[in-house]
Length: 316
Image 1 (cartoon, rainbow, N blue to C red):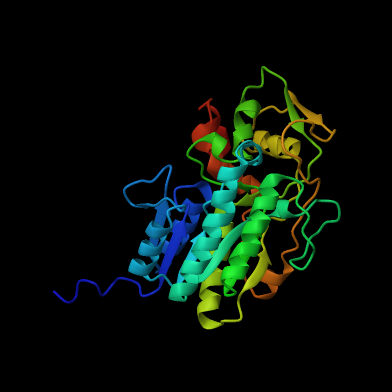
Image 2 (cartoon, rainbow, N blue to C red):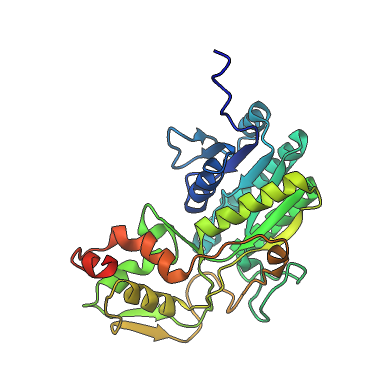
């Protein structure tokens, strides 16, 4: 009988927001690389994940004390800038208060916390941005994430803040990512579609961010000096218009119906023009992984391809 738990890995990691786009990839990455992995989710909690409201400090305390993780990756956040503007109190509760509490609880069990943040802490006027550059968020989303950074570092100096840009990956629904959500406009070529061609983005695959989180955690287990702020990003600069054209091209679809709009957007939350992140700090540590955009986007979007005849031409 005592043979039963021989295969349970000794390193334990807890992932918040494990039902989200990034969280699912982070869960998978640790789980497939010999970590004892527990994920928690709330809105979309599934059987394999713990159902935890991060605003319930007792529930958070209990899971952390029961599981005693070595590492906590905090992916849960309100990430939609327009939703944050509309529900500022709720967004601040999740992005700031819950993060501060998580940092306190992590400190209580000596866990290494990785807090996921954003390129939107910068105003986008003088890229590329190093970790030491002064943040100046233009919208409330960026402000709440920056407040969250400060809160976690104040409550637990053994924290890593990982800033990342716009994400895409294997989505459950196209709306899950600001990159994949464009696929319908790309596919329905009978209708012209306006696409932003002003904001410079660096689409980043969640699998790559997940690999960075695991590499950071594993380095930290050997080297306690691993803490503070880090940047990770894809290295292909594209506007949404250029992403849409690349998506069309990847699936051999027309793009002549897509219209580039070069003015800065008028509606919704303000966005930085170019908040490119300088990733040399992580690169110097030998940490990183980059999936080429075309390969990553093809893998992410082919299940949502409407015209199945294209599948032959795309894959053969």
